[in-house]
Length: 194
Image 1 (spheres, rainbow, N blue to C red):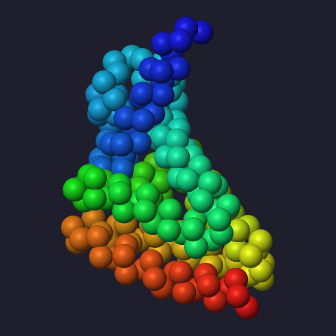
Image 2 (spheres, rainbow, N blue to C red):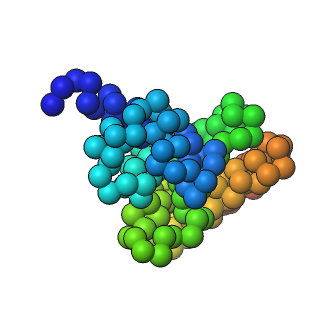
Image 3 (cartoon, helix red, strand yellow):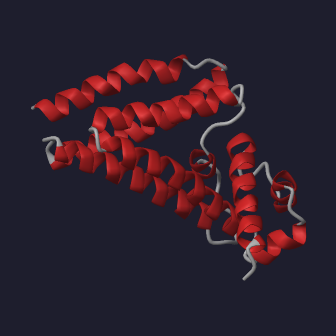
């Protein structure tokens, strides 16, 4: 395999993640995803022979891995530090895009799955959400939260952050994301100090 192949494939994935976070999966054809990444359509089908669902699943995993790495690094300092980093990541995404981009994982997760195909991209979104919840839950448990409470709180954090990102985009205002920050920190502090 030449050095160019991984870069071309990765460029297509990065471009797909960006377009999906802006337009959603239903609003993007394979041709759109290829064009957005600057790749020829033929190359896109070469790397992703199963088509749009395969490319979207890889784009979701790519975006999920970026956020996962941020969480893993920051959670070493505790769940509040992880929360702050997670919030900062999405805050930057929304602001830097002038409220035109959100989370590609959420964008794929809320779309109606295709009738005639395996919803590979939706499965990838579920895997990413589960990974984020698992990291947060483990950090909460490590700091003394009861296992059941840690799992519920981790789900709440992911759902609140993802939902507030969507609200920020709709309102063209960062306030929803800022509003949940203090509330989630309070809940985390209560869970780890009990």
